Image 1 (cartoon, rainbow, N blue to C red):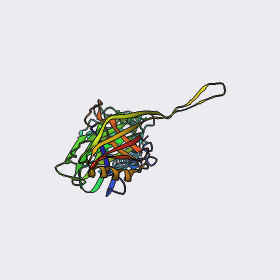
Image 2: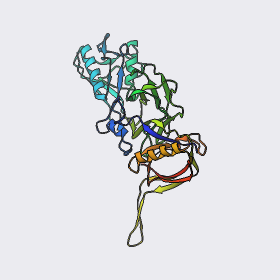
Image 3: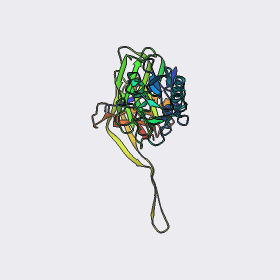
Image 4: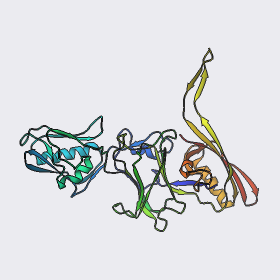
Length: 380
């Protein structure tokens, strides 16, 4: 069985040197994503806009024929409200009217409104002007035509962010062998079909041109990337980042339940053997009324797994015992049961967040030759 057992999580709060996030909803903070026991309790983004110098201007008019230029302060804004406030400040610094910048509650598109009190009492967005191009793209406005004849203009496209990220400073150069991110086992990820997610690594906290960058595979309720030899194996890297672009997501936010970045356990001899025994669980509750009617309380589904280890030499057996002693029945961990797609069509479908359901059972088959049985349950 082509099996990876992930034994070291670099993102655990007590292990990692430092962590950062592009944005977070106060009701869904980033701390949730590091709790492997509560994958249903999620992190949500709140709108991250990185505005670069030279790409931060928007040309508009308050009087016929008179161009004004709003220059948004170049910075990384960690929420819609902070970015919208910066754009409002830039518009009012260049013109005489009062402006509001909002996100439409129905369409989720950005809208700029003038009270029409300054200059000639008009408001026009000069989107065909080249100086507006970069900012128009950030806001979601088409540059095909200017906007005239009104005091408010809603963008043509939804733009939720310029990008989002989770950032990890591991403290020392390291070579992870796996990344996984999950939602509830029975819930789909919130990413759209056009989302881009990349795992990036660099020696410094500057990801302009990262040393390592690779697309992360997106499944229904899992994102993952595996490399048994290690990501950028020739040169360990200190800083790692999960990068997202999904600017027009219909949910108006991105969301993840649990993430893991780390190494798998290396054994010198021995492995899980077939058969892999898989049990299907339906946690729904069924009761019968006095007249015999069936009453169902529908609950999630999950799986159980019996893993039989064989051919373990003494060092490998001791590593697995130490693993059991660390996780016990109290702490969840990730496994990749089919990294070479020996029995499935997609290795990601067999990347599971699991927990022991009972104590590990071991047998000494002969001197220096151990076997072991693990009973696991998929964590919801």
